Length: 463
Ligand code: GLY
Ligand code: MN
Ligand code: MN
Image 1 (spheres, rainbow, N blue to C red):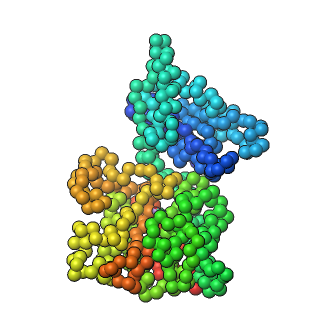
Image 2: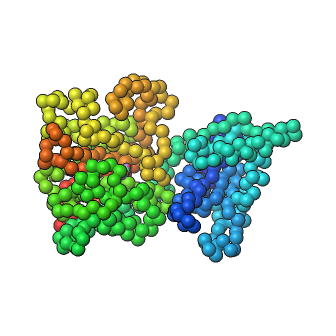
Image 3: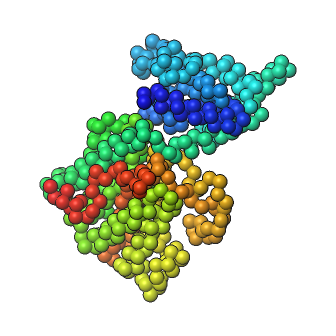
């Protein structure tokens, strides 16, 4: 299928959703450009929803889809002067053939054309609370329609959040998306391999100033970019030693020392799709016994979660499977003394594990690293559950896993120094994260081009 057809099919699905809701029109802008300082902008990144429906990555563009299936694009006009400085623009004349839309106009015509497009529509759909000022812009167009009400022109009386439709579509990845996600996962895995090997090599042959977190970040970025990735999917985390216990640590300038672990959480974005990998490895290539003990618990917990990632299981099942293994490990190693904390079920009930494992095991992943999609099962009834702090609440059961969903599996253990914490484990932070595609039979880990097994990591780094 040509790429244009893929986006046309997605737009047709939106039109069907509007039709099923009684008719209407959907409006969607792409992302703004953001200034970084003076006349320099941050690198431009399109809006994920907009790109999902168009494959078009120029700024200042808008899309309108009507329930009838008619699609209208607004894009920057051709402008020789601007194109000399900033690059070629597609322009409205070429847009229909290139993007498969029915009509295209210059963005300059938005305020003229939008009121007409909105006139006498049953409803208007646009993303709520995602684009600053969008609601006010739509209000302005609706006001223009309202001003003609005595002529029989009426504004749509109902507004819907377009994200509700698009989030559900994006949750299920099609074959085009899966192919890109696989490639992104492969590139990122290669980058992790490169970082591990560089770490060991630089500690074997020490350099002046030592091995720093930013050296490994540079290896990651080099590998992402040289395989065509446009950006990192999120700010890379390269955390030496105790820094690994800071969940959102950024790659900094701390020194990586032999005998310490390094945690890298980094993934590239490729053609609009993310990858998200974490590996934890000994900076010099050899785990200490205490590190290996905790490391193997996290590996085992990840395997338990992987087993629970399949058609028919729920989104929470991998988390619960991983958590049980982690808690067993916390009790076996004395991180949580059995005499005080009891058995696994007691710890799960008390929540004492949160001292060492304080985040969830998964999130959806796709165009956005923390991708959209309902985490609870649509149409189900709320039932008694517990919130993150163990307090009773009513909520809908978590989402049933189905083929095409993509989620991360990322258990960890983070041991900050503490009075009753065995000293041998202090400052060890470990996380292992892979990206899983739910399939009919189980799940496919798209990021296993970099090893997870402790012996395999040591062998790779010994090379
Ligand atoms: N890298 C962000 C996350 O793992 O969720
Ligand atoms: Mn993640
Ligand atoms: Mn991550």
